[in-house]
Image 1 (cartoon, helix red, strand yellow):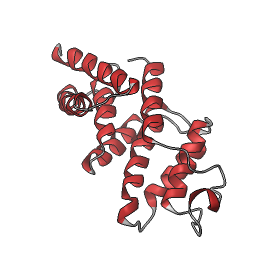
Image 2 (cartoon, one colour):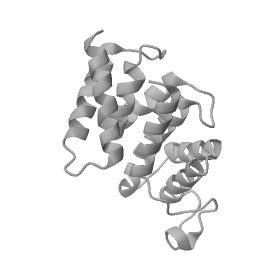
Image 3 (cartoon, helix red, strand yellow):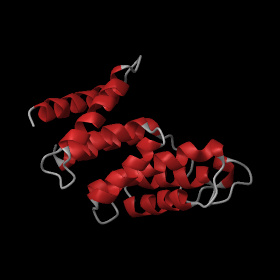
Image 4 (tube, helix red, strand yellow):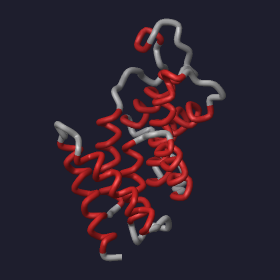
Length: 178
């Protein structure tokens, strides 16, 4: 898969999973009264806004800060898990950070272990691309099969879901030949 196609598919996935709730300063009135700049909601959506504005380094900083918070309320754990997924995407693509495919795979594996469905898709292509240094065909096949099941059973798939499912199936076919 070309770097551009990886970027497009990741961008689609990020756009689908994230709503913009904050600007760069995470104005308190735009999120929740009394929320600090280091609140998980503020960090996640500030990172999302930076990503959408193509300030990838700042997005990485926000999401990494969220990843490293020593304590987080259970109601905000999904934001930390999504931040792991997003950091994986930035590191795999080299957006705002030095590309580090192994670190990206590590973040995605952590996110998958915590139940993040989209990370299955990312592991499918990260481990299933013969040109990537992370190529692991047997493991990739497992992640592609799980991702295919996830995206196949979406009751009302959007266009981005359909594109992702098509990409997953291409990787499955590629891996069947390995």
